Image 1 (cartoon, helix red, strand yellow):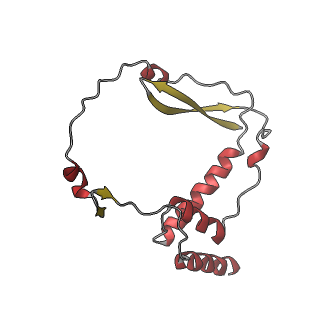
Image 2 (cartoon, rainbow, N blue to C red):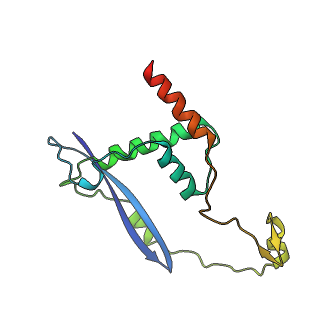
Image 3 (cartoon, rainbow, N blue to C red):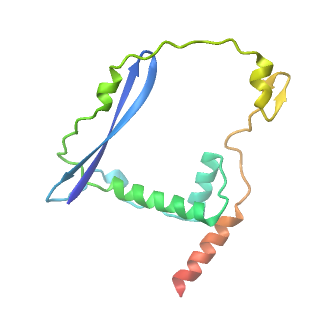
Length: 155
């Protein structure tokens, strides 16, 4: 049985916070899931995809995007069920990079009007951003996607 472990390490170097990830893959004979939090599969339904749209403040533009997100969720569910008991971390070259000194930042003075020139909406010399997590209207693509998939499942 192949096991995969994803390790993360939070590092602060020269005042910069970053997270590095590394993957451990090993071959084991016995498979016993050690993380009961992720053993239940998430339902791939319209309500969940609508929630993902709202949280990301994005909108699915076509059915291929919906199918891609569904595939990503299924893959993540499989990864969470992989047994990582007794797997030793691998050596990572990222740890060597952390000790590398960073260059000094060179600051430049920027004119406000020049900085706001590319902004789509400016009010009184302030950049206007869209509000986050506002309720969105229902996406008709989700209805069509689930209707099409339920019909294809029946035939």
